[in-house]
Length: 301
Ligand code: DGL
Image 1 (cartoon, rainbow, N blue to C red):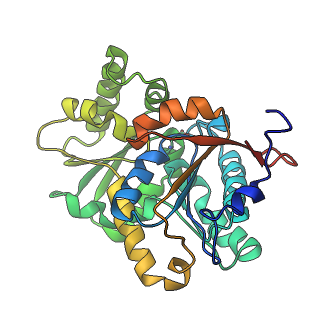
Image 2: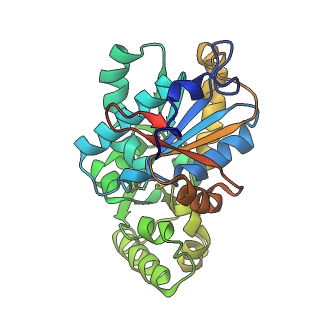
Image 3: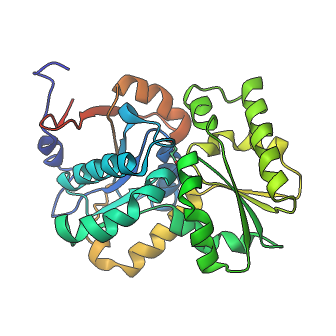
């Protein structure tokens, strides 16, 4: 990136569409592209708000990384959203929600931004997922990090104590999606393999949740390999409905969200690559900008 093209994030902040009258877009964060499947549903459900999307593609995937690393990366990105003026940030990434959200909410926010809020995608999902199951047998498909965190079983049992939750990590699915290997024999192989392992654990599962924001791109393929009477649930709509409810209950936050119906996209990797992939996830053309989050280099171009 040339020096001429480097622009301080604060010049973005000063654009009228980004922050005006003390209002700013809702921040939407993911390790890469997956959060765009959530953003798509947020825009469908709440189209009048502005959204600022950041994909940490330069450091993705997060799925196999340690708690400490996911926490450090996520916090860094959350601080970036706050610098842009956002009062509300959604972690549209299950791995970040599982490994970083609680620490950020409990330890960091009170110190760095007590009047701002960071929400995740696990709570909005777990508080309703039990209503989809007839027999209380729920299957979770997610990254290794999300599965190992046990966040889904723990949270689902808070709302639906009688349910039985079975998990299966699908470490190949994110790389397959990121490499656009969606309709290939390799994808069939890994989907069959992971579904087989899940149903070995819970043969009576009647609801399967895609607990990774990348997986909706594999929904049709997964459906092909699922028994006909098993419901397949994606999160985007659940998160969007939950956000609508949250904003109606928190006018102090809602009033600080700008409403021009715009979406702005940023990535920590090459913007052109991001744009080429992002359309698949977002369902509409995307024009992103690069942001360098390395210390002392917080620039966009
Ligand atoms: N989008 C992330 C999630 O929902 C998965 C991608 C990654 O491993 O970085 O868990």
